[in-house]
Image (cartoon, rainbow, N blue to C red; front, side, top):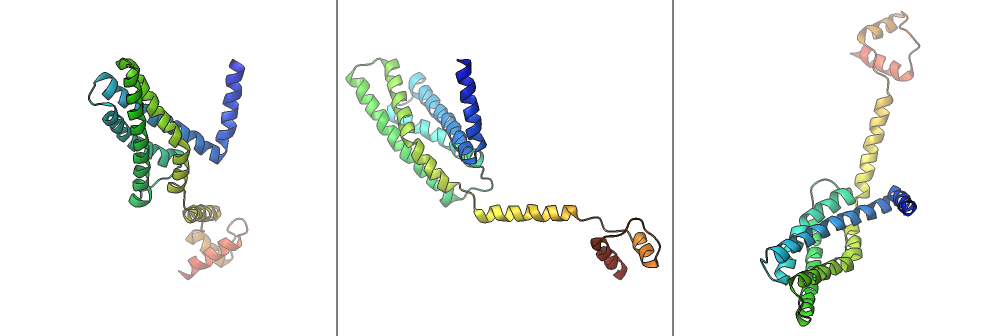
Amino acid sequence: MPGIFAQTYRRIQRVYQNPSGKKIIRYTMVSVVSTAVSLGTLGIVFGLLHLWSEVPSAIFANVVATPPSYYLNRRWAWGKSGKSHLFKEVVPFWVASFVGLALSTWAAAMARDFSNSHHFHHLGHTVIVLGGNLGAYGVLWILKFLLFQLLFRQSPLADNDEGDEEGEGARIAVLPPAPSASQAGAYQAGAPAGPQMTDVENASVAEVGEL
């Protein structure tokens, strides 16, 4: 058994080193978190507190799980920062969430009818409802991943701009410091001012001399 776990861990590490694999693994982890939030909320409001029936409880649980799912997927799984775009990101995400909500609501209703027809007690009823909700999440997992690829993809122009800025910073970093006024005067007077100056330093000296 330890060998199996070690091999699985190494395989996950290899997949995680690939950008696409890292995204899928993080998306899966976010899905686990959001599912846990949804099922936990459903178990509390329906199983423990008996606040509502199956369908309203499933609706409330999915609404609670949507905001953390959005921010974790956008910022952590897809690595996108900055302000969210209302119509390009937020609205489509909530639409997808409500589609999943409709599916989970249907699953909860089917679970209710199934448990009622078999006369399950409340604990069995709760397990059936949770199972139906979990099945609905599994069906939407792949479709949501494809949708998030479109919503949270990085702009190539922004990536190029960032790369240009980094390259410019690197070019500036390798330039030698400009000589001081005393070094410039000594050089113009013919006095030795240390090691031979490069072309870049000569240009800097000429600028100082003009001042």
